[in-house]
Length: 281
Length: 281
Image 1 (tube, rainbow over the protein chains, first blue to last red):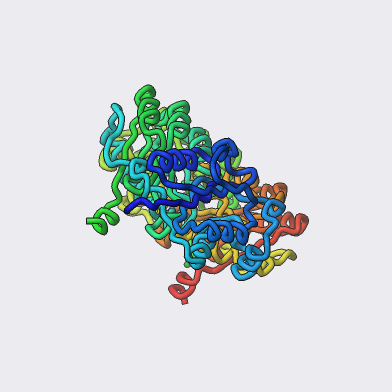
Image 2 (image 1 turned 45 degrees about the vertical axis):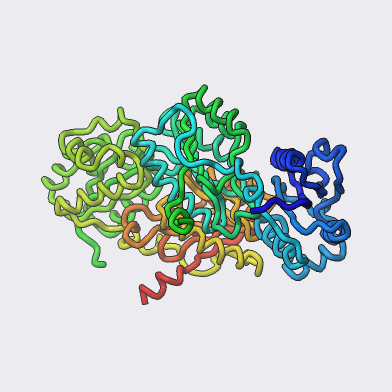
């Protein structure tokens, strides 16, 4: 896509918002960032046009972005489930949630609903991968370690299972060893999945983390992300490898991630989903 | 089914083998029990015709059951994954695993394979529920506590998800709260799922355990089982309820289970799978 000249950034936690801001700086894209209390690192907003607010302030977020003529938006970074007290919804937000029913609060549906509401307000939403294509997980083996034939069988089986779990809108990650699914990600997050599955292994070491992407329509909202922290955790617990869906997941700090994998002889592989491959070509 | 006059029992751990032995005593069914070292409670075999052996002794198990003219068999009780040293396979077992490939060792496929091998040797295999129909989870609310409308929505959603997870041959149980799947059972077992999901709740209390059965063909081998221990665990962690697939899961010590649920105001409900209902009627 052609890069926009102005970009509104609705920023959660993690390191991705800062990377996007640096990218925009380097391309002379004017930005206005909405940060959230207790979610967004305030340090990255210093010296930049921004508003720090609470999750429940959808009305003022929409107003300020419109007033400042920001048409293109990216929602980026992790949003931890807000406590109700952090929401303190404004009128717009309250009306929005009243329409949704309160059940949507705090889960994936909330993100989808926010996305839909912004689109309805006339904003154009972009996935970060549309702007920063370097962030996309490449296909193939990235480091020096290579999966064995048995590992490859686990990757293949695990990939299908992780996709099916993702389609159920539960999690996107599983841990597999010797054909046995040790664990499936629920709300605990990938790091906790990695930690607990280390306890369930039949052998002291081994196991593969398989992380895939949810269906296409969710990719602008919540792309699975992997980076040095996850690789380091897998390595410290003796995992054999990490397999991530190519072209559909984000890989932050790729060089550092690969270096960490290499140091622990852990393989790192981007796997292309067959269905998506067919659809793309 | 008509009860057999003689029944071979291949017994794992847990309380079900003893209940089956007591049932056979009460119906004057002659039994011969195969117990496994480190798996079967040796106390229940005292004073009864039995052989205590190791998992890897398939050859001698088949021989003794044939020599004693036991035609009808039940495989019952939990089998913890054996360590390789506990296997010490005899010739028959070694040939069996050589045919299977070692990948089958210790997971669900092992149970299926053992089942298939015994059937091929001419034995007739029965599910315990075919003999002891009282063990089957009944349909409907069992105790005094009733699920709210919101709980019912979680049960419905959770049931579909647990079924889908079961179809992938991963686990059979999930924990759900307010429409969000907190956790999915992998190899850790239901109790560990219950414990960890208690940490992931947004509110201090609540959450529903949903336990379903794998597809029909697996029901003779490995039926999901629930009993006072699981109910007590859910109650102690403040869960709202337990929903179990009716007519397809086993409920041991039903009166005690219901009493425990009542004391903690936890609901206990048997849910009939729509597809199976149609197939049965």
